Length: 342
Image 1 (cartoon, rainbow, N blue to C red):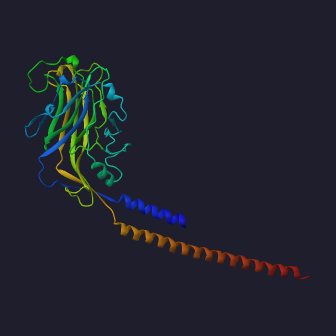
Image 2 (image 1 turned 90 degrees about the vertical axis):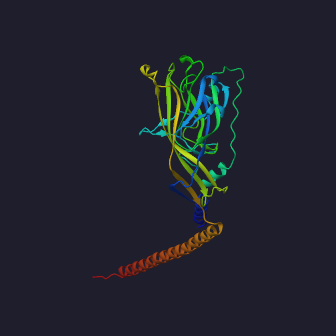
């Protein structure tokens, strides 16, 4: 009975600790004009040979190169790192990702097991990691990282080669130097939260060998999201305002007859959904939890008491039947022993 009571109390404790999680959609209230884009990517081209720009639906063109950091690096220092993986697809063609809040181990699905863990991890300030030292290795790649302030409207973020893309002055880069193979360490919208693993984080996408004219395209649908303990409050440390996104990828080499019309590079088209996803975790007070534990123990004791009484009654009935059966057999035996002689 003690083991059963402990199991029931442990189950109630686990349920109380997890709380009750609800997911609701609503129209986003208020007007928000700005949004951050956090990027940490490694391109297999030299920093001087690539241009980074953003063009949004409002007509603004943002020169991202002026706001982002660029560090020369070596491709081999990144491609073999733990956790770097290619985007896979399921039987329906949907991208398989491991997005979510994680610590040391990754879990499938967006969101940690408990919302309070998300809030705790999200409260930590994020810092960009340092670029590994070259230690005499050849510079063949460029790490681009930092945060961009964007208008909260539909837009295109793209990385192209020097002299290609927008009408630009200066020398065009030789086509033989094109290689838009890339590793995305971080691509997120909103506050920079390193603990949040997004669909494109830690992914590698390599162009086929000798495929200089290759176009990588990503289509993102961004959904504003609020994780909160209790009622969402933008001024409370118990709420985190961030964004989730779903991604579709379409990447292919540019046909030779289209090389003059299509531009090689990395193109990220993002669209902001006009909805807000609220993920709220509610938990009973500790006093209510204690009352439930007392009820569980009381119920277990009452059930145990009735169980013992029932078992005693069953044993008593069985014993009574055995005694009656034995007594009847004795009487028949005596009658048979006496016998009747003819």
